[in-house]
Length: 192
Image (cartoon, rainbow, N blue to C red; front, side, top):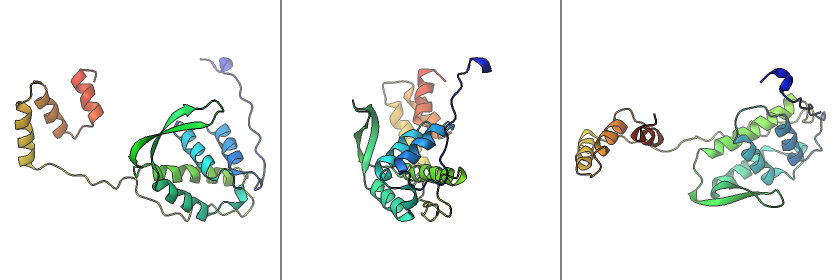
């Protein structure tokens, strides 16, 4: 596609030192200028908008961020399921608690928006970045466990009893490089 065939997008005019804007308005401005490749950023920004969208930019503090991250850590896991007739997002429960990985990503998304506000001079002069004093959470608190040699041998012996002749080979491939489930299933179908 040539540069001449790409439609021109009108640049968004950003207000200067606009502490009176609600966070919902700030999030809209941010998304209008966002050029990154993270497609999940939109859903996390929308999640923050539902949580603190009513607050004014000048009033957002680290206490708000901390409280919302704590609230989020206690919520059940949900998945995005589209929008209702009025354009509001629909989320469905997935069962179980929220995994540890999304919390740092939500915090990083809000931190990126706040840094953008400071860099683009949307935030009031002297405004304190509310995410700087928030403790970073580990993204993965799961323990990695390796099978002992004896456990590996018992697993391979059990695979021999299977009616599917390729199971032993598949398990052996999984044990050797530590491949992920998706990689193994693609290999077993012959698509990799």
